[in-house]
View 1 (cartoon, rainbow, N blue to C red):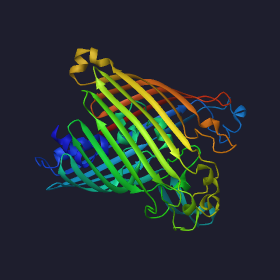
View 2: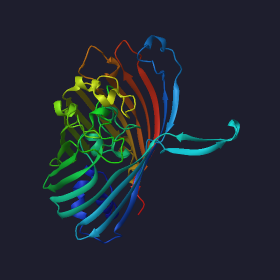
View 3: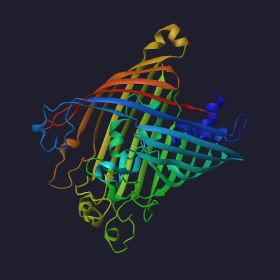
View 4: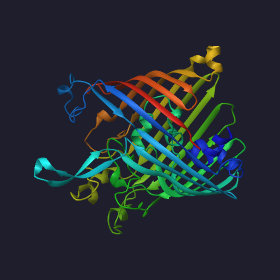
Length: 427
């Protein structure tokens, strides 16, 4: 147990671990070095078309064959160190979808020509890299690359914190996941409240899209995070009721003009691109039940002007998003699971758990029609039901059947998902 507490200060995500960090930073009974991580492997059989025109010409793809996918959505390594005297370091390296790979090869089939090829998709990202000074349990300052805890998914993104095989779809569609940026954070816990305030680099409106809203906003095509504009994030959690955590979080910042190079006389001088997000979430764990829920609503100012921004139209730009972006987006979801093994004495004594769960969510990244152009396929209702088997506390085996309900014009999207995930400490 002490090892897990030490791990939470140095490595776990900002919100799930933050409440315990200040309590642990002054204790050095074990090694100051922490090594841990989490990972997921998933298989999906999607009983709908994966053709590029399945939404623009749905009538042509109603009877298309199903398709299957194996994936490693996230494989994460935590490294942390407690320097003592309240100073600590936390890092998180994430390999998404198996990482990325390229190679230079001599192609004998093409006369010995040298070629550089991309051989593996995915991403490798430094999701966290921060230095922290803890003055007391109620006062901690963290500087560096940090998780932005807006919404349930970002605050609790490890695979043991949701029942579905993949991260909850609604928040994962409209917001970055995991949302991580460089900035400064002040956080702490006092009595039954945990709080955090962050100052961050602003989002980049050139990355906003019709199907993912601001999801790609923190991305930068250059070697640094552009910070012509700034944003702030706030979160507060309450733990007064035993077994219940209630959270409120939000974000505000300007996004137009947060580009490189800084065009002081360009669109950023005329438009602000204000981004405002409000979120409510909760987790209840008691009486062999786990219930989680969230509701997120977002506003984007000057959404109609984004389509015509220079970087989105320039053929040499790394952005080139030609679709309109919505002025509003939302995502709501709830899931509940009951531990069936809690009623079997022998399995309960072994610490094994078997949750039968259901989840419902509804989301739309294009909730307000910015122009006469409609993207009605973005409005989704999703229902999922399945199981989570935990043979030991650090391992979970998941299976679910899910169904996306789209508007009547489009074909619904059922799928079967199976996965295995872990989360734990190595050192």
